[in-house]
Length: 344
Image 1 (cartoon, rainbow, N blue to C red):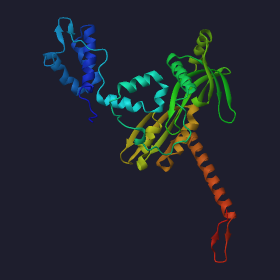
Image 2 (cartoon, rainbow, N blue to C red):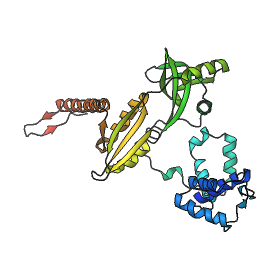
Image 3 (cartoon, rainbow, N blue to C red):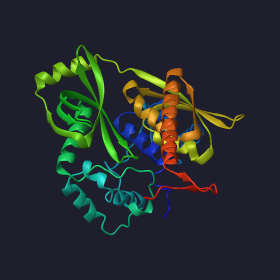
Image 4 (tube, rainbow, N blue to C red):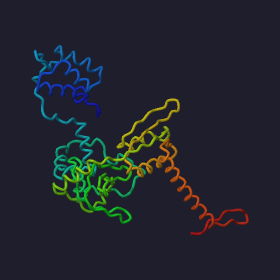
């Protein structure tokens, strides 16, 4: 199967956009060039416009007040076989239940019954993954996820009861602003603001641990969202030096894909420098992810972050050292100098 579709290429989309604008009102030559240059490569826009202007591509009509189009465009273009195969693969992913109703999924399955999936779940081998995934097909989980997603789009507050680990219970009004998926844990997390005293604090809630969730009335909604909107999240940044060993740069880009970052390559040192910007409430998660890369990543700064990495590494080394000492203390050495392990 060809992965590139000539019909729906970058240039096809650019001309489609141009024709839709030209159907609404006449466009000047400068506007035509601007639309083409925004959606294609600059050198391509230079060659495309003369073809449209001369009539070699008979899509635009030149009039006194500009370029117009009489082309009748459908609202939606038919899907290619590749697109259908990709959708068929998505329908096999349990997370699709979070975004589509059962009737919608069944309708799509029926419509694409004669299409083979582009790939299957068993085509992927996933390692270093948590065994406890979220139950995406659970009606309660789906209801909770959709309320969170709707609240993010509408900038709306929700009444949430949450039970975290170590009997950490929370309840009250929360303003969700981001949903994040963790590929390693196979879980969704909701990032929310909540009023704490006179300030607004940021919380990270595991969707699976939300006990109850409900919309709030309009008066409380407006008041709470206005108060929350005045708060500013505290952002920090960490500077990482990444080697090419063990596909570290590719893994790093995947692990930190949802964070704002800037990456540069030092050809002389053959290393990458990546500056990641994150919310202060995410720092513990960032530290854990950085440590998971081992020696393939070096933390350059800031000093506070470096000190935290050192503290955690020393603590882990001490635990390992104590475990070794405890194991050796239970061993015996024979007269021949042979180390005898204790019987289980």
